[in-house]
Image: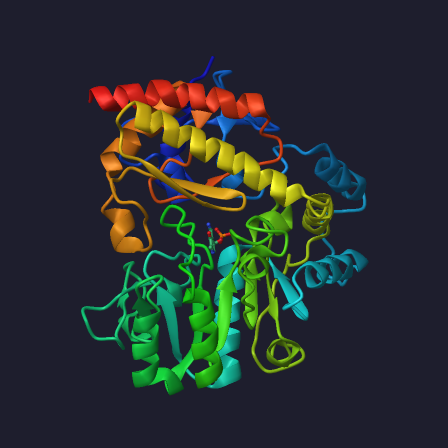
Length: 429
Ligand code: PMP
């Protein structure tokens, strides 16, 4: 039997770091990543035959569990017709109609191949529409890896972001202003100085890339107000939150409606899909309707549309999200109880079907500074112990966890039993 460790060694020969996306590498965890052979429902099965209760769900898409038979059937039914045509297909219209029906702030929508493309395109559109160059984003929010978005806060000066990766030109990064999440006063101050130059604010309406941080009351409302006042475009990056925090995304949950929305993950049912859409007036500037260029050879791919439509249709069932949310609450309260019993400082935060664990004595975590002040070493020990117990959490203290409707009460119970042992290890450390 080949092991994950052997496969990782082989992978490292011709794949940078052995992985096709960095967070998969288990960096800092002192163990090789787990190589998965197959998945079913709430479970991952690794190449060594070990089963894990999975709370990553392919980083979000698997909201009804892995290998959902309805999604697989929809793909199989299309398969023999061919993989891609590069022409319009009826199924793209079905997808667009479905998205616009579920998320009413979207009047026109364009399909792309990833979340990164969705946010990159939405930002180009916001810049093209407003004729302004500057964008505002928030520390600890991740919007994919396009140049304008790989930017961290500059040292003090509001107007000069710094590249957060070599290869991002400083001349481009200086158009990105990075502010603290959940700090509406910082946004107001920024706009008082440069509001007339800001094309857009882009925000994760629940932050899921610095663990799980919901917006404080008034934050999203404040962003809406400021954008209205200064004629800037408000972009919600709902790549993670879309169809997960609620069917209609975080915007439905919090009742704040953006001008543009970026989607990914669930919208593709596990296939490589993203989308961006919003107000007709703004979206009409996209080519071929308008002058802002955006395109994609495989965009709207029929198999990907079939998977996404099957999944979206399924999660529209009444009370799907209520049940998902209550599973998250059962898991989180069970984890808190067991942490407390073991005398481990840990809190949980959640929104709908996403959640996060913070190893901290703080009572809540609202921004990047607070998230990074948590005990990352404790998280790593917990993660590793949970893996040994057959529970697959996201391998980073800064990633959200994802629940699926395939997680049965006994899976959650098994997770809590595993956590009891993991917390015991932590409290001995
Ligand atoms: N936006 C958010 C909020 C995300 O969580 C991610 C990926 N996790 C992206 C954008 C980028 O999506 P992709 O990895 O599909 O490019």
